Image 1 (tube, helix red, strand yellow):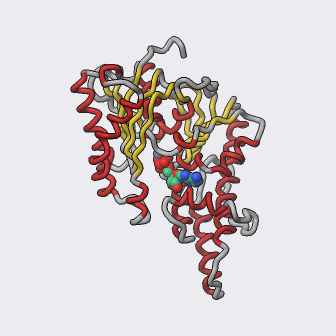
Image 2 (cartoon, rainbow, N blue to C red):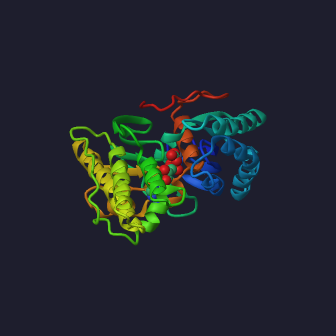
Image 3 (cartoon, rainbow, N blue to C red):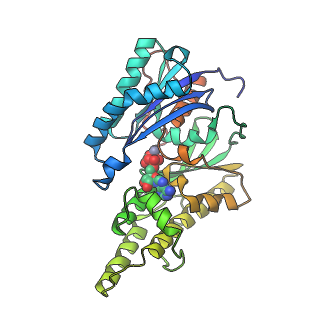
Length: 343
Ligand code: KG4
Ligand code: ZN
């Protein structure tokens, strides 16, 4: 990496319900990362309310950017490149970050790089806190399991910025399944952390929920599993059960998701001769999933620290840095990134 041009990137991320800004050096060393979460506001609605999200971004964006700079002990003059999430995401949310980044870039005459949110999640695997010991970089060919609220994919990364998509979900994303099952078990929003928490008191083997293997492909499907949980709930209610074994149901559901994600990733890593595995995206914050991947010894596994699994701007800075360092962006003005290189 030493031959890549050094750059300090200030990134902004407003694709969904987190207003975030971060400063990152040379694609890996994190100087600051600020995330203003709207979780409590959206919890009232049981999910993200797009208009409310957009308004909150407008309120939070300036203080969040200022905080990111001040925590890094820098001013805008010390920044080389501005970056912003260009998509995918909620249009009304993205535009707030985009306008802020454009304003800052134009005002300070810095290049502006539009980053892809999914590529951001992947590049969260390269980040470490500045001043701490430098962890090894993920090695190519790298098998990447991307598991977020909107996406579940297996990608083979053969080099920086180079992906071969092996498969993706045919219906619900893994995070979406966590959120929907949480709702039907009447657990609070956001669903993933709620299911994780209650699962710790449950028996993951009590219910044998179906695993959709999608044999012969690296695709995924989670809607059948979700429906099974729903039928189980309906069945118990019909039989007059007043207190449902929520913890056992949540734990058994979580186990079914992890089994599929884990086995398919290992199988793909073997088939494609991957050297290492990277797991990224919001669902990679799941403790049981992390333990499952870390416990196997065949492949070195990279999973970002918890603060970088869910949405943040550090990952956007990292993805933007590699695009910039490999000369894949224009020098001034907004470079148009494809919605996702693989779709
Ligand atoms: O990456 P992310 O923050 O946003 C998207 O780009 O979608 O992912 C959010 C998803 C949500 O579905 C959330 O329920 C899930 O990640 N999630 C989790 C956990 N923390 C967040 N799922 C399972 N266990 C968790 N601990
Ligand atoms: Zn995300």
